Figure 1 (cartoon, one colour):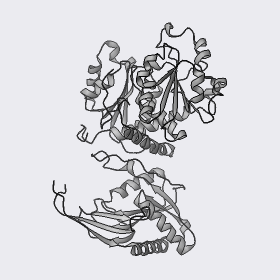
Figure 2: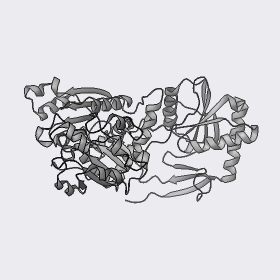
Figure 3: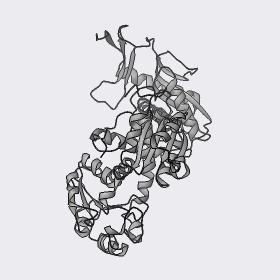
Figure 4: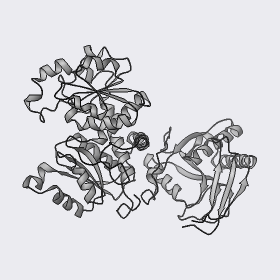
Length: 317
Length: 189
């Protein structure tokens, strides 16, 4: 795994090692940004004249749109770069691509990349703010922050709460970032899934590993269902989506065992009928759409907090 | 690093402050008429408490209370990215229609005028008020923008490096009043 830097003034690369008071501060600032999104004019001049680039080397529409809208609501100019339309398909290296971006003098670059550690490499070599929008199977810190904000809205302080993460935890950067952040906030994390997706070695991250979903449903304050990423997996990990749904999918029958206040979350996009049934995804415990709107607030807060001083550079870091 | 010499001077006590608030309330009523015809908008945080206090004083005089809103200007500041630590946002709460309404912007201390500039820009993003007037408890001079108050509690001669503190409600351990911390010439950037 790449070395993790704590959140300083310049970048957000991951939640591992970020101290509690910084997490709480990001969440507090994000909560304040929600009111901007409820105004008639949903735009503030805070980042006027700044340039934010979204550089996505992996397909993703919703995360990119969320970052772009966040930047626009802060009055920054946005440029979007995606690998499928760019010269990386012609063999350009990540650093060469980044040098080209650098020549455009961006203030922040939002990076998604299939290789774990790619945002860290860019953060080390370039003066602009780097925000990790998902790197390989390492971290996806803004998703975890929006998840924690949503949990906090409903449950208050997360100290002592139990969060169950169900699905392919081994290959999920969403799960990893949540595990790091939630543990820092004092929550207990339980993971559940087939042995190929939730191997016992995950216990090294400080989580409890289970292989039956029913027992975790009963004790959880939050049930976070991960998407089964068919495009990322070979056939070896599960025999069929039907079998997965039967053993690990969250449907109303299973959810009936949960406590009255238990929340159902999902980072999207959802596979209806595989990891989550349509009735549960659209049901009263589901906060999936709140997650989306909190994502916008979290990303606005991070750009507000991280973007550097005038004249570029990180003199105040 | 040597500590610059500083002295603290109390320039207004609790009773004086209350009388000043009452006078500001009378002046606002005298100039703007019925409390239903305008709203008070306090700049977070000092101005917010002052706006509430003014509304109470207006109620005591007229038997009706003007609408009160609050405005957090953080996202409109012109010095956000010059090395200051970025603050958590306060609450902008304008629970009334801005369009066509007369507003009195309320702040505790008027200094460079930059906060007022930010507040005006933010208000314009919420709508088109009929007018905006400015009420402050203390005008300490040193304006950097062409901004002037319409209602002033007290004009104070200060050095630019002085600190003016207004204690208004909220902090029970601190007696209400206005204090000026005069800082020596040494050690000031």
